[in-house]
Length: 148
Image 1: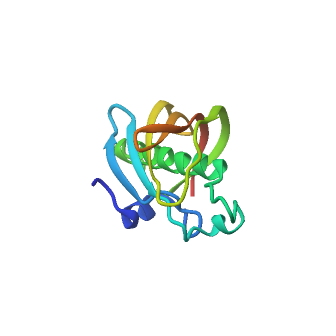
Image 2: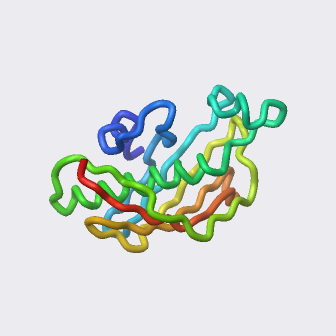
Image 3: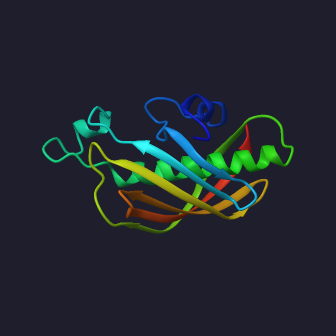
């Protein structure tokens, strides 16, 4: 394990109910890669309405969790380069999003994120979300980094 949820909260501004990653399991700043984990439980608030008789994690929240893992990578890269202070990473765009399989209660999502181009004010990442080794979602995300 690289970082637990308390360490993630030191880097990301997200809090319950919108902090969607539970653990960073691998971080490789020189190669711009991060792997993160999300345990999907039946107690997640969104399952009350999406859908009561067939609970499925909303795709937009899978993308958001992917973005949070990417934001963690971007902020850690900036800090490794000597940047100080707190940062907020804001969505700037989503390309090539594809949803392959539904994510259900009891699943564990592994997010594999690769930085394609990360600079001081902008970042572009490619993310893949997997459950049991099978791809459930993939996308290219763009973000703006702001000092907060």
